[in-house]
Image 1 (cartoon, rainbow, N blue to C red):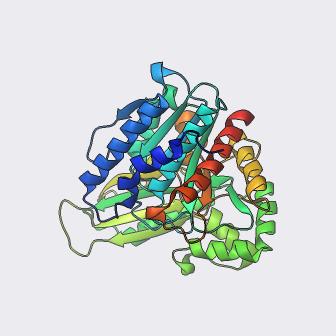
Image 2 (tube, rainbow, N blue to C red):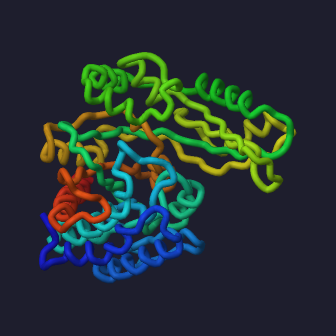
Length: 385
């Protein structure tokens, strides 16, 4: 189902400047391009555009009059600070934003969505967690839906589409002053949260066994591991470690500066890891240093029978050989922030582009293929909720 009356061409044209901008572009020009496209989109969709203050604002397209949306879409208008492959294509964030709005237009025009919808376009998904959680809490009545989706664009179409029933968390701490060893502090924090984590459930073990028997799934996992030394074992054990075991990293500044932390400590994974509590624990272990929390993404679990997950599974069946279900994604996502602030998890879905398509200059046919699939996903999600 594609937008009628040439609407797909409208959204693609509105976002053309933004999608063609490179990562090295002057940030203010990127913001201005995103703002212009989103103003036109909000008017077309009949939504109210709200922009947060700051050099890297978050744009919200909200139902008029404070109505509750039937669907919330999370997107990003800028590039990620870290590589996103294989989760999605490099530079595909802006194309996914344009296609999401085109798909929303198509669903609304067809009368397939009751009420209205909300769109949250953040600068990025991999950082800015503290600001994002604040926005979700502040705008909860206008963002709290039955289902929430994070559409992404990829370059490869797997035989079975991947569905993730959770997401890893992440806490980033800045360490100023003192003599405390950041590596020892990292090791202590990782050991403590590893002891406190419950670990995989029976369904998780079943899914891990199935994935371990599929070479494609294991190859995909290897693409997601930034440092192979961090993950031990082979097959099922390697999957379990990559998805469930906490990992700690330290980044030290090569040049000392009083206004900058002497080290950054990143803790990733850790089921039920509370960022604020972890920061307080770090302060108690290193009382001679000043420790500030820079990021706080939450671990999350999605119920297999949640409407958003069921929509992913049925869309996978219609678009591929079926769903390849993972107990969690191998990377950090904002889903836990949505669950805590809105009571609704964020379901991630990647749409593959046709072979040979250039992400930053996708033609109308490739764009329509993404819009068509996202329209199906949005309609399924709302119908199931």
